[in-house]
Length: 106
Image (tube, rainbow, N blue to C red; front, side, top):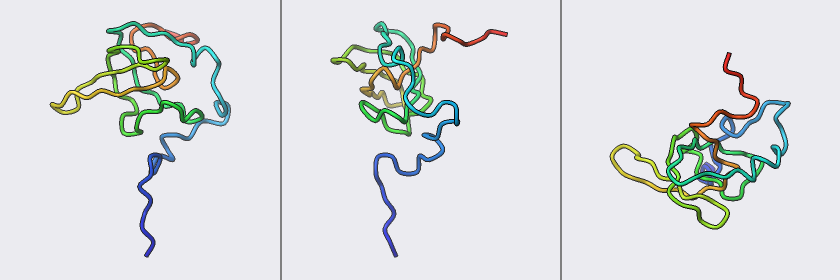
């Protein structure tokens, strides 16, 4: 029998699949987002850009920005009872507090 792959993106087909109209790279403003220390962000992995991508198990996790590391951000959260930290590029983060452009509040 063939051994199953245990790569970084294994078993993530559903997580990384985009709708037909959303395929390709997102707008440049998503790459250039700025976050303040202490701001709440949601990990939303952008599958078209593998650079600075957190592990798929953290998709949808609400985290707090701890500091800026180069062009990326160090984010922290509690997993069970263990505090954990990740480093992710801003393309893979969306703000949890502030309203997003194009989002309707109806």
